[in-house]
Image (cartoon, rainbow, N blue to C red; front, side):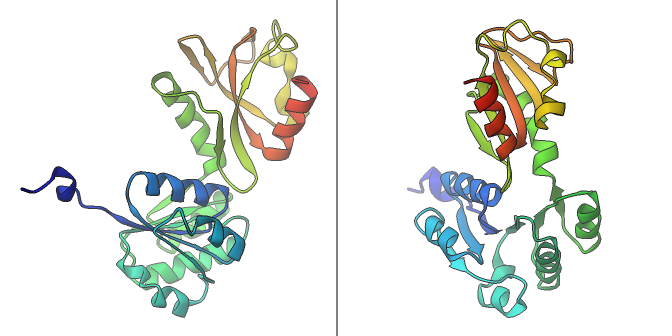
Length: 227
């Protein structure tokens, strides 16, 4: 008798760059039962994922021989989640394309980076800091509240429960974009979800604010406003 699980074809993934963004992808794919190879130049990060991913190795992916030795072209999907080193991201993507990898998703730091990645053959380009906020917020109405979501090495989405200090103020009153460089991408109020709230939206006690921004700015906001 053939079990249903045996009929499910597991895809194989390689995640290059195990920072917050790549690490989150690695964990999620592993939780979904996929075969995942994690690659990073940082030995500490690799050690962290050694017990999480199917395999985790230290490697410089700008070296074609390293990628060849890992059999990278045999993976169904390779995710280039390299942090702030745009040159390494571009060179890695170029080598992956030349080696014949079937599907490449690459993380872009800005629009120029995206243009280059697409030009050299990336199949999908993502801007975690720009694109994921609305997507996550939209899905919140039918899923669990997001406590903390790592988007990149320096940016996150956090859930902040409004207290008395915030209650009665509008988003315009708080002006957190100017003061802290943050954006409120959604508000969850009971069973209601308000995506991309307007500046005139009033905050009430126990509203759940979904805020996106730089980690240091998020910490500063929480300390100042919610202390």
